[in-house]
Image (cartoon, rainbow, N blue to C red):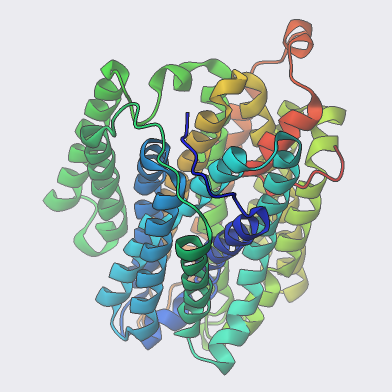
Length: 488
């Protein structure tokens, strides 16, 4: 139970801070994707090295999310939100000043460590808002995150073109520093429960196996896939992963609850989330880079960062539109069927990209198909998680699902970056075959997602009888989908 202070909580101020944090997080996540090639040139580095601007952020976020959430429960969410906003502000300030790849990656690590603003913000809403207003506040905040992700992909071009790449970080820094100041001076801090501990060894094992895996995947093309260093990293990752699972399974206070992970619905749904994390983040790496390939290569569009972002507008639009209907979709066709449909659309979109990518209208259409697939899948994944666990475990289960998607994103972006840079022409430009291989890889991952979706258990009439009310499920599911409550 979280202790309260005598000072009243100003709900509009709290909500404003939450909204600023959600928007800043989604912008930091999305604006870098279409600007990756520009960042590589501006920072005087290779594309595969520049990919660590994404990988480092995702890796740090995957590790920080469960740890920061746990610390927030123990010592107060407001205190940890201040820490998270401070990390985001420091990281964005470093990148706003940086002109070297090493310093930029360091700043992105700090930003990833500050990604705890998302679970902390939703937890704060649940703690301080009246119960009848929690669903609306959570739904609106999550919807803003979805909108922010789409906006980030589109506005990155104008920012880089007219202001310079440093403003990709200065703009979020202004937002996070404002939110941090409001937290410090306007919002009272509560003490938290202090009941339990943070599992440091579990966090260390999680960090190490992810780091070994991602370094191996990212550096494989440069070092050689059969080199001792790469093989050693993969072996170390596998050993550490097994050790992490064994330790978490036996721990009295696990960082990630393995017992819940083994439940069939949770396991299969999280597997789908992992695969969609791979495809969503990887496509945001591969497609802009493909679009920006110079015309002298004989393929691609020679697109500027500005035009590359516009190509993503259909994907962002359809993902948001479908997510807005998440509640109605879940009640009409069933969450499992929605995941299946989403996986099918995703596979079709990537197969189409692999074989039909010579005209602009094809890219627009394929991005629209991918947006529909992501919208169906992410909304349904959220409902499946919420429907399958006890109400008291909703927050934990949702947090785990977000974390698994983030891990998938880190893996996907690293793997696709490795595929693209593994087949370069004499002038250092990736060959068309490298992008075809990347899109086919994402299509195969989407088929694996479809297979996992088919294995999700069907819900019985008894399951439906003991469900919570649809609007309660929709409110909780909005935390991880970006859906609104308009159709509840």
